[in-house]
Length: 498
Image (cartoon, one colour):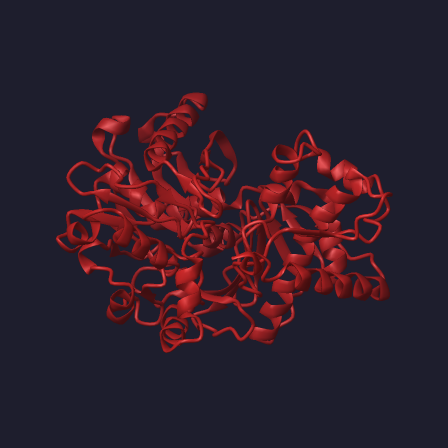
């Protein structure tokens, strides 16, 4: 019997491969940072071939590190950055253009044209999503319009479209497949009917011939090609990264929620097998789809910039040497001295959905020091999270009793405590912060029989720390009122200069 389960976790900033044992303990892992390219203001791209090369490299490195044979793996799961759009040549597998990353804003004008139209209402009703450059459809439409001859080739099925899961599956197994959590982020997939919608495809003039086949999230998608690892390893269980984090946090019951602080911040609440339409700018999406059963849904708030603002303080401004230093600097002052940092570096996501908003620092005086700026940046992550939690509670009619947190920024004790203070509820940090990888492993495990069922997965969840609120209500209300003022100043900035 195979001893291990593997998980590919390919995010915006890097790709990781983790090997877990039957107790969900990581026994080996490897990581590589993935470069991002910014050819024009608001454009964000990656090299699709680098994504494949780095994925194969970390798998081989982790197996070597743990002295693990490919045949020791019961299966490999996959979780990926969502919405990122790749088109490649069917015969050669070569990309026809760089990957257009989910953060890319080049189609903001097109999205603005569609807002408040009957098309936008149709998309919201069928796909559960608002019109925004974040999603795949306008990216794919842009490629078909701007790459010479691509539209005609796509119509003939000579080129293929996929999000990152589909791109990697093509190179791992030779199959052109996806699953509902990724498909539901394209603006093209009807989350109620469980299929790509002909009317949505027609709206964006996207031919069905270039689309992947959709399989249930918790299923076997194929086996690795023999020349990759010398063995045919099942690829089983695929989830978009935020749904994988929800799965890894064992939020299997309606009303359970998690927040992932990675490059962006993403809050998901499981709503069971009932899709809930948002009235507060959130997304209705698919949490996971078992085989032979209706999918489980989630309501989601997406924040574009969270941990990325800490990277910017390090790489863009040189205010910190590493991310860990931000915790000590923030705790080195008692407050921000009324400095507010709205980290809208690539626009605002939920619940505002303003692609023209820009990063804003307010309240600077001669007494402002780098500690105040760093603390304000961390607080900005928490304020954005607060806004989404309240919107989520209004939509569902349920108040959270706790919020499970994960992602790199969840290591920051200052951020965790401040978030608990703002929300007035406990925050729970698990012992494994890379819950996207754990979620992919869990999905692969239940799909392949490595673990019996969801109850077995829940028994493996381990808590590292629990944060409880300490802030007084009057202070909380004052801080939140000033934050609201700051967000209004950041909105609609870029459009004023057009």
